Image (tube, rainbow, N blue to C red; front, side, top):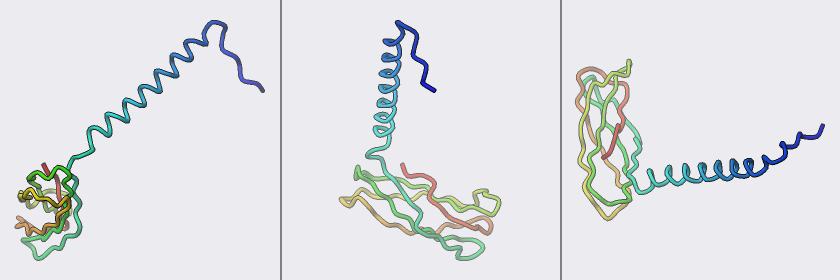
Length: 119
């Protein structure tokens, strides 16, 4: 079964629509990359529940800008409530990637520890 042809005189609007969609996709990709390239990223490497009142978290920070950062590390209970939080200063350095270890004091037993943000 052949595809139906567009009505006579509407071909230019099909071209205008296709070009508009292509421009919209290109602008979305540009804005998405522009908003994320060069920003710091972080990753929780490991955590260990030391006892009922503390958690140790190991994490690494990739900072392409080389500026000083402050990372917020939190400990979570089994119901995902926050039972401990600490802000860690990450100094500016020439190295793009750095590893850190912090021990959080908690209000009750935590089941996990993670890096929440780095700003």
